[in-house]
Amino acid sequence: MEEIRRESVVKRYASYAELSHEDVALLKEAKEAVHNSYAPYSQFYVGCALLLQNGVVIKGSNQENMAYPSGLCAERVAIFHAGATYPDVPVMAMAITVKAADFEVKEPIMSCGACLQSMSEYELKFNQPIRIILQGETGDVWIAEGLRTFMPFMFWLDELKK
Ligand code: THU
Image (cartoon, rainbow, N blue to C red; front, side, top):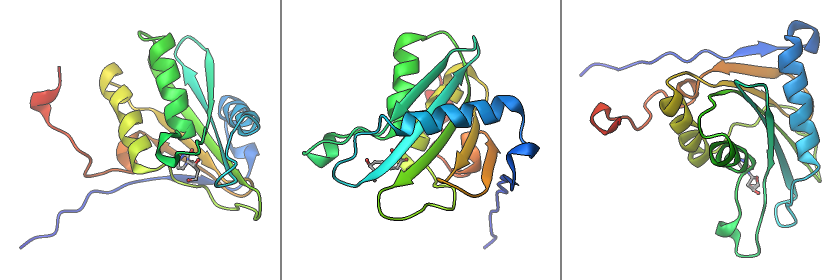
């Protein structure tokens, strides 16, 4: 037996002053997107802003439904919108932030597995990692270079790559 280890690195920033203007601007757009969240059931509001290579920013927010599984997370709303509207333009970065009705979210919240998997498809499509910028409602900002950071053993089969 041997252990298989894959290292993941996330950079943590305690202040906006340490971030690039571009990352701060994208995070600000994600915070604006939170306002368009429709989350009457969970009252957990997620906002996402996605930067395309052509400079266009696409926003997404979670959209819930009375039939719970019919709703969709903010990240997939944004990335599918990007794929449907700008199919040939690579995705450079995604900023994701949250707000809860009843408590302050002081830590970055990780995207769910289905979102990570969906987002990773666009890394495959454009053959380049997507920079992920996370922040709770307040607190530290986390930045990761690519989805593999969060899914080191992600589903992958070279034979399926077309
Ligand atoms: N949610 C997201 O928007 N993104 C995620 O990655 C995880 C969860 C939403 C779905 C639901 O509307 C609410 O957060 C609570 O789960």
